Length: 515
Image (tube, rainbow, N blue to C red; front, top):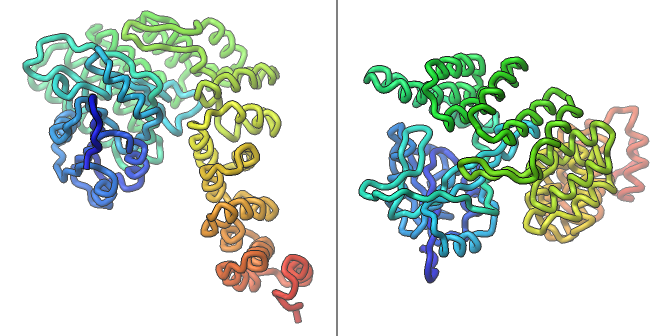
C-alpha cells in the first residue's frame, strides 16, 4: 500500500526489463517514497517477483522501442504530486524526507539530479552528468524514443521552470562495461538511434534535425564501444554547422571519450576545442583537459589546469561546477609529484563533502594506514556504508586495509563486516581469524571468513586445513570439519609432518599424527 503523508507526495517510477541482479538494491534505496511504481516491459527472469516484494504498484506492460512512451505508460499508474524517475541500475543517495520537504515549497516544475557512474574511471570525463528526473505529474511528461526529455504535457502552455535538486545523487552502474555487455543496452540504444536517423533522412526532415539525430548515433556508437565509427559519425554531424550549442557540447564530450580510448591525443584536443567554443564557460573544458592530462600521466599539466578552474562556477543551463568535484584528479596529481601532505588535505576536504577522492586501493597505497585513518575520520555516517561497498567492489589488498581501518574506527558497522566477508580470498590466515571473531560477534556466523577460506579450492591446502581446524576447534562449526576432510588429502606428502605439528598447536587432538 502507498504510504500516507499529509501534503506533498512523491511517486518513484521505473521501467524495467530483466533487472533481477540490481533491482532490489535500487528499490530499497527509494523506500522513503510515498509510492513506487514498477512498469515491466517483458522480463524473463525474477524481476517482477522482486518488484512485487518492494514496490507499491507493479505493472506487466510491454516494450515498443520507445523509452519516452514506456516512461509515460509507467507514469500513468502513479498518483503522487511529483514523479521521481529512476532506472533499475541506479541507487538513490540522499535524504528522502528532505527531498519531499524541498518539493513541498518548490516553485520549479522540473528538477535535475546528479547521475554518477559507480565504476567510472577516476579521470573519465563521463563519470557524472545531470539529468531531469523529477517533475510535477500534472504538468510534465516524457518525450523522445531514445534520448528522452521531460517536457510540458499537451495543453500546458506555460514555460516549465527547471532547477537542480541539491544533495541528491543517483549512483549509476548500467553503462559500466561489464553491465553493458550483460544487458545489451548499448545495442538497443544504437538500434533506436540508427532508426531515428534513417526516418529523418527518408522524411526529408530539416538539416538541423538530421544533424542532431546523427549526433545521437555518434554518441550511441561510443557507448557501444565502436569509437572510430562514433568519431566518423561525429565529424559527419558537424558538417553544415547545424547543431545547437547544447547538442554540440554533448557530442563533443562523447567524442573526447572516444578519442581517449583509441587513443588519439590530437583528435581529443580538437574535440576539446570544439567543446570549449560551444560551452561558453571555459571551466568545464578546463576540468576535462585536467582529466585528460591525468589519463596521459601528466600530473604537472593537470595541476596547472586545475589552478585555472574557479572554486565555483555556473553555466548557462544553471549547472554548477565546484573545483572540489575534481578532487580525484587533484589528489592523484599532487601525490604523483610528491606533495603527499597537500594531496591528503585535498582528499580529506573532499571526503568531508561526500566526494570520493580516489579508489580505495589508491588511497591506501598513497596515504598508508595513518593517512586513511585521518581520511576515514571525516566520512559522514550516512556515507559509511557506501565506502564499505566501494572497498568490497575494489577487491584488492589495499582495499582490505581500508576495511580494517574502518572496523577499528567503527567496530559496530554491519556494512564493513559484510563487505569484508566477501573478500576472504584476499586474507591471510591471521586476518581471516580476526574478521571471523568480529563477524561471529555480530551474529554473522554464516559469513565466517575462516570457514570461507577453508572451503576455497584456490587456496593452498595447508591454509585451508589450518583455517578449518581453527573454525572447528573454536566454534565447533561442522562446515569446517567437512572442509578439513576435503583439504587434508590435498596436502603434499613432504608438508604433512609440518602441518600435523601446526594443527596440534591450533586444535590439539583434532588430527592424529601421520602414519
